[in-house]
Length: 419
Length: 162
Image 1 (cartoon, rainbow over the protein chains, first blue to last red):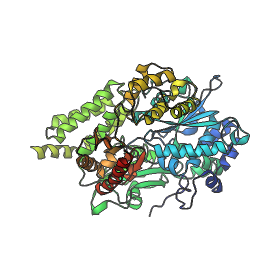
Image 2 (image 1 turned 180 degrees about the horizontal axis):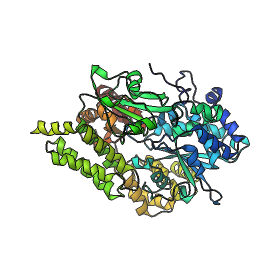
Image 3 (image 1 turned 90 degrees about the vertical axis):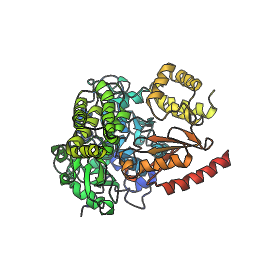
Image 4 (image 1 turned 60 degrees about the horizontal axis):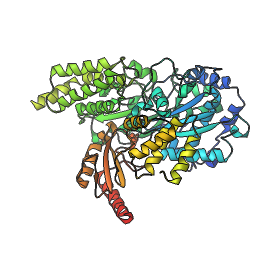
């Protein structure tokens, strides 16, 4: 029986936990920040590199390496912007951290600010998350009142300010350069890279963008050391990981796992299996943009590398489960409708492609599909991949291509039923 | 002219950013909230002045994001999620139910301005689906009966305040 590892959720799973600053300190909080203050910025970066921490936002890029790219001695301020624009369908893990243990996340953010020499960090929270925004603002107020944030970090360190910045409803702002445009006060359009944010980010200053869960790993890494973090999970997939489980399972929820858990066990042990004794039809393993897995493909280790080998990805670790009665054509329509709605409109293949794909799937739903259209749908998906400024084109192309390949017969059934 | 409280909040927001334009999104939220949940051309002009950008820039921004409104929403604005995880567990049926109960369609206001309904994409509450946001609060693992009860309570509240 698979069990939860409790590192990031150590406090959250404790029913008596008091999430205020007082409660966090009582639970051993802020020790890591004190220790980090005694360290040189480069030492924190090296420690993070050694820990093997990879970004939890979707791309899995090594965090310490990302920090080491920051342009130095530019004469400009450097910024840490936290990406809390959790909007990949299926994902709801960061909000657990912001709502129920904001101080652990903020401690991680303060340590990370020290590592890259940031004096004012911003937390870009998606606009719909008002409860999370309120929770973070209350926690920040406590940190200012206690003299931890402000002119001198912890009363003896450098100046550090943190500000919560609400978004306003746009999936694309989870893409780091669109997020930077958005926080600058513009429409959220992904930027052409290079230059990368580490050279020219927020207001053209060196900037690192990190996800909430990524930053929340920092207190543990500083307290327990790189090796302890690395010891969790298989090689190259270090540390605890939060997964968001949703769809047709008996116990949907956010769970903390090691990355050597099996996807099947996650669904049947944590999720409690499929409701009403139904059979599993498929799983979307890493957010709406990941390639779908059929029921007989789920015996796979849930890690960055193993899922990539299985032809899909871990993405934001959002697992959406669907049972035998699910209309797969309708499901793909929902996914593509989402991307069509959220395309920023900057690049033609994505703006037009997501719309065309949605129209073709609608033809199937209306009984007007045929073999020719199925092929065209697959091709439109392919044409969006790798042809756009950001990854939204790929994000829509992957589900289209995997659904039309793995569930091609269901598209044919829809048209047969209609005929 | 903006209310004194709104002006204070705006000044506080401006102090948190290196340049005034950076505070545009949060300022628009504050101004919208202070004006019964929607923005007017006059308010956009005022915000443009505060953030030192053109009014066209502000209009471009509000049309890009889904949360800024140019029409007055109901006293209680319902955002019903019909994205993938919510859809798998009854989000669509929930939206249909609300539309029937209020005898309206998503995108409209009903019940003499007490409620307005919007169909939205992912709200980020996927493990607690289906989810509905009413004004700023999340209501999770909803079903038609739970939502009916909630709306009855709100309707009574809305009328009491009217």
